[in-house]
Amino acid sequence: ITVKETNLQGWGFALKRVFDIFVSALLLILLAPVWIVICITLIIERKSFNIITKEQRIDGRTNLPFNMLRFRTLKNEETEVSLSAKQIKLHSTEMIVDKNLASATKIGAHLRRTELNELPQLLNVLKNSMSLIGPRAAFADEIEHYTNFHKKRLRLKPGITGLWQVEKDQTDGLHDDLLKKDIWYVENWSLELDLVIIFKTAAHTLRKITNL
Image (cartoon, rainbow, N blue to C red; front, side, top):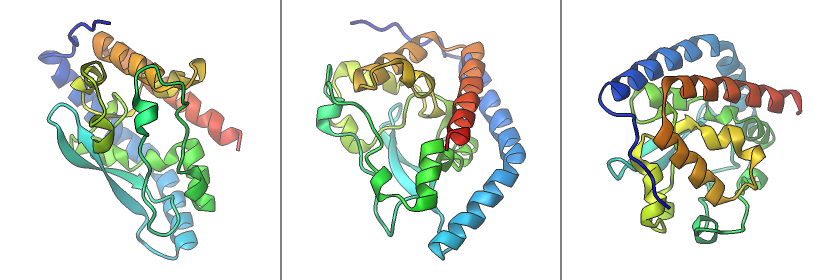
């Protein structure tokens, strides 16, 4: 299997960065009422103002860790469980599922199902540690199991959402599906593609909220 270089080079990086800043700032303003409601409900449920967690992920371009922000959804001080070596293995038949859902609080479970727990990552985008659209952010212990083929998805900054997230219902939900979607995005990036993914993400999230 081969992969061509990303066409996100030179002006493309600058354009994507401007797009990230503008859209994430706009979303922070438009979604402020949602933030307020989520913050109030989490503070009441947890009886604490400690409602945002920092989870260490790896920026594959630099191989350096960064703190990915999320609303705190798990009980007590439990931490997120990464993908297993079996799931990461090429041609694995083990589906990718949210293994942390059982450890979530009542409000936390709703946030995870609707993926609204990811909203604080808009701050990561403004800090330039993430992009709005990009490959799924990986744990350090996941990358330890990566082959050279896996590493091709690390050529771009991790994203809050991405092609796999909005099209995973059309796949078997395997890690190979994630890889193919992420690598296809790396190869075929365009501003138009980012816009399509954002609109699909919004529609995907709205469907999940209305189905609760």
